[in-house]
Amino acid sequence: MRTVSVMIVGEKESFLIRTLVKKLSDSGFEAFFCSSGVDRISAKLADTDAVIWYLDGVESAKPLVAHFLDDHLADGDKSLILVGEKSETAELARHFKPGVVSEKFPRPLQTDQLIEYLQKRGNPDSMAAKKTILIVDDDPSYMGVIRDWLRGSYKVAMANSGLQAIKWLGANSADLILLDFEMPVTSGPQVLEMLRSEEETASIPVFFLTGRNDKESVMQVVSLKPENYLLKTIQRDKLLEVLGEFFRKA
Image (cartoon, rainbow, N blue to C red; front, side):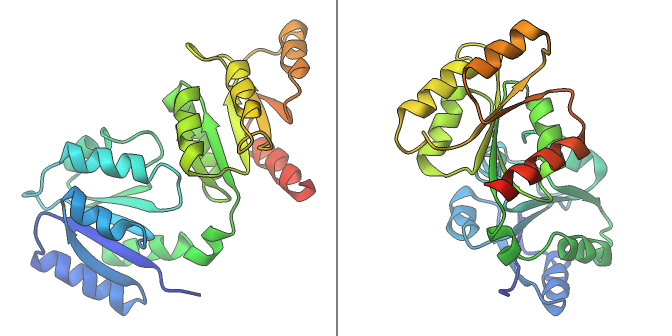
């Protein structure tokens, strides 16, 4: 089992950040400081399992850094933790899609609580073995809810349009796609057709997500022969049960 790598992002390596790095290191983590610039973060992000953005009253929310992290942490295989005054972390969290920020801790930081949280998140080896699910839906709030339900058991990525999903799949792979049936611009059926027309994505299983359960709508969904379809009113436990059964049989 390899060591969990934790990046602490901040404006400068203050005494409090140095203390945090030491406590994390003493607890068995590979912890290091990285100043809050996109280039510096980018150079080290690939080998990092968790990012702690430490706001100390001097550090302010940097939209470019937030946008970069929002893009690169959206697949759910790395944790993003915000530390700061409640008003600071609330403001910074607004720059991220629902579900990207794993947790927020207020200052003064209770380091033991943070360490306990990181330990519960699991080790990177177990994360690597998780199946990847791509959620495609134009409603970011709904995607965020589903992602929060699934992220303990699966790697989860999100795309808010069919074109964004196709772009994501050009550089990543998924074991299952949860696809909104009724999306503007490019509908779910159109996205499914695009996926099936490309050799690289043709074999990826697709579950349609639909908010309608009348007979005509259900027949329309089934006629496209997705792997399955789910009503958007599905509850968390039922969703996890359906997905677990699917992957056991796959």
